[in-house]
Image 1 (cartoon, rainbow, N blue to C red):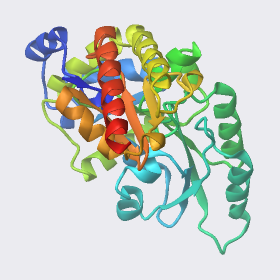
Image 2: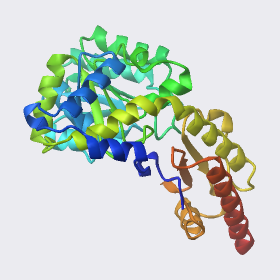
Image 3: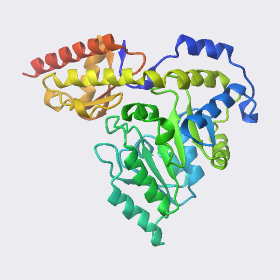
Image 4: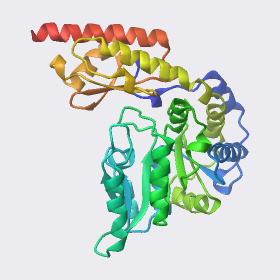
Length: 350
């Protein structure tokens, strides 16, 4: 099986399994798990922040950050295509009373700065929910894994800080962004007040995400984590794999990016499929299948019996994601299957 649905499907490496088995454990709710403590210290150091917190998922991490930053009835400004807006089950509104206010994302995952300025300006009018946070995503999932440039991150951060508002970075794949841009993660998170990143996506750990920020911010986020039921006990069994992921995986992410580029180039050569390989910068590839006469779901369903899994993201958009469990041979095999499936579907429709 060549599973390209997401980089969340990876299995722990033998080294991770060994680390899990040998992990030194304690009760993390009491702050006594030494493996968790080491992971949190490493995450804080790598993001250039004072402290960090292990949470079960990226969604919980973003939610804890938003509830820590925002009072009830205030608004968090988010991208219209962002994970926080579309894929977190409305948790910030349901649990935090936060008004999610989407503004347009560009094709490259950036926020439309004119729209951002207009939303920030509503702090001058008490008829509107008052802004309390700006959220940016990097890399941007729905925008084809686009790495958002440091210059744009700085513009958004400066705009928020001029209004004395914090900025949170949904950096689920921030290590992919750093690799694509040739930057280090601490440079990319320098101007944000908090950041969440996933251990269980490009980094290949089986579970877990990190939230990082100031010591005071993390103290409050820890309370939110407990409120959500995310306080875990001997969580070193999770943290042990996370440590391996942080120490070893960033250095190999360029391989996933090269494989994604190869996928995009191969897809561009298949009649009926549309993609611009030049826009593929990280490990996410999204292509259009409109001209095949089949929907994205139909294409994915046709691939599955041949041992290739893909994911529909819109009626005629298919997403494939490269990761550490798919090598170049797997990529080439997936292209052969995809070409054959599309050709057969077109012959049937003729």
